[in-house]
Length: 158
Image (cartoon, rainbow, N blue to C red; front, top):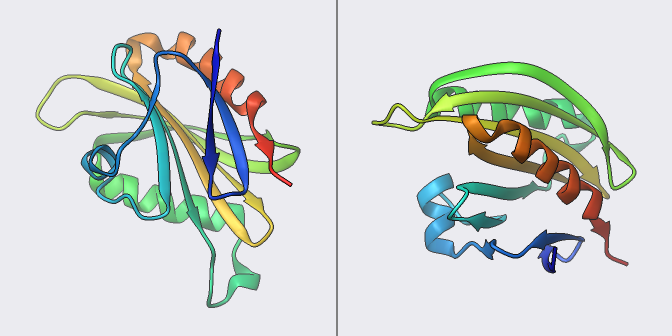
């Protein structure tokens, strides 16, 4: 598997296999409604998207946690996604830092296509990063393996 590298906010990199391309601002807006503070990669043939969103709290930053950032993301997902269903709470290390996450499913608007997604929030310095993989429900096991490889490839830049 050849590796390409996505640099995220000059903070860390993600190595990804051939078949993916870096998402354009137009694609990011189409799938996430905004391209601000976000980057991603997309494999159109397998319909897998890996997205990273970042936020640096300004007010009450000392009270912000990975759990509170995750809860904010959950509220947005619940309001925007059709048939959103949180399946499982997750926790793991990402780049050696503790991360909090969720696994959920939803239906693509105006279709019967079910998507699955894992979303992890990790704090690096004063910035919180939400790392998300989205794929078709029927490819869940395959996409989980890909997520493991991508998270394992993440490297903090010096």
